[in-house]
Amino acid sequence: MMSFRSDFLRTLDERGFIHQISDDEGLDKLFATETVTAYIGFDPTAPSLHAGSLIQIMMLHWLQATGHRAVSLMGGGTGMVGDPSFKDEARQLMTLDTIEANIASIKRVFSNYLDYDAGATSALMINNAEWLRGLNYLEFLRDVGRHFSVNRMLSFDSVKMRLEREQSLSFLEFNYMILQAYDFVELAKRYDCRLQMGGSDQWGNIVNGIDLGHRMGTPQLYALTSPLLTTASGAKMGKSANGAVWLNADMLGAYEFWQYWRNTEDADVTRFLKLYTTLPMSEIARLSALGGAEINEVKKILATEVTAMLHGRAAAEAAAETARKTFEEGALAADLPTVELAGGTLGADGIGVLSAFSEVAGLVASNGEARRQIKSGGLRVNDVVVTDDKRVLTPADLTPEGVIKLSFGKKKHVLLKPV
RNA sequence: GGGGGAGUGUCCCGAGCGGCAAAGGGGGCGGACUGUAAAUCCGCUGGCUAUGCCUUCGUAGGUUCGAGUCCUACCUCCCCCA
Image 1 (cartoon, rainbow, N blue to C red):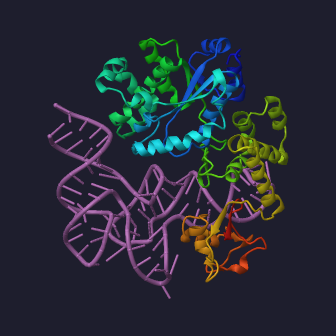
Image 2 (spheres, rainbow, N blue to C red):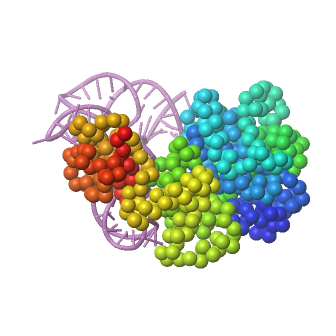
Image 3 (spheres, rainbow, N blue to C red):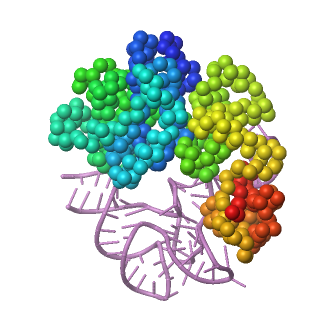
């Protein structure tokens, strides 16, 4: 790969964000000579983005940090269609209400990474519903649709699998790539946006936008994709034991978020430091030199840095401290995830362990699962292994701090607290 | 339009003479070993008021003491012919 002159591309390159660029020399020149507006699209498929999207958000962050204008595009229009790229079946359609609610919820995260009040390089939050929802079908077909070749669209890898496999690809979904291409052109016209970034699975969609731009008379547009990230052992980013690693604080607390990064595999630590923190490269080089058990200290730094960007420095340090107490001292940390019990719930007859773990704490999925885990020694109450599935938790189990600590495996803990 | 084939445990792939809560794998979870890592080994991997009850094999009916298995119709997909 060539060496870049522009701060933005050099930074992205040395930190491992770049998978493919449509015209690296041309784009480098653009970034070196002017303030560039670039965007990444986010479809509102859930009330929160998850760790898998963090790499995209970080790209926008660096874009702004190196003096350019970052646009996060909410898919209020495209979300009504659903991206079929590399999916083997159609997603369920979302209602407008759901889409709007999801967008409102997702939006909150961006202000932690982007500055929306920075003069000429303020970040922008735009919703493609703005131009997509009002489209006139016939006009759109004539102005935009005529530039697309179905033959060519069918040849894209992103839909090939779907076609070869057997699953039907509805006409609705098939239009997604056209809408995304059109988004790029609209952003170019309205906001002078020149670059679209995204995950490598978006390459085809982005390039379509560039082509459409040619035909519809925009300036030269560019594509930049990031690698599809997996952990060293092949798992997709953003999934953990308890499900997705959400970015919204109301869906995943800072402590659990911190834990996700703390549990990074050795082989991923350096890569993640570069991608997910803003530590200087020299510092990352120093940390990467540490090996053996020392790498645990590096993982803590990784976890704290990533968490600090999202949830704030104070919350990150509190999470680190909670983890230190819990894992290193074996002490009881008061701010582990806590379930409050309404007055007297523990009082009368106590709570059976099974329902305490399943219904009350939500650590396991069902009573049956709790029973199985007891058999294999995976459940503990106040750090004592549970052996009897008939055991009942009573006020006598309360620690001096007035809580009962439930643990599932070594890493998942919940405090029950009567109030 | 004609002919042939397929849909299995709500993560995936996949076996399944009429007695089936249904083989096997992957993934996931727990345990052991470690460093809150990886690798490895062991166990678990429908629900419940639990020596029993309930819900599961594309959908709806039917035959049978008993249906994932047989019959009928329907849905979806694949292949061949037109």
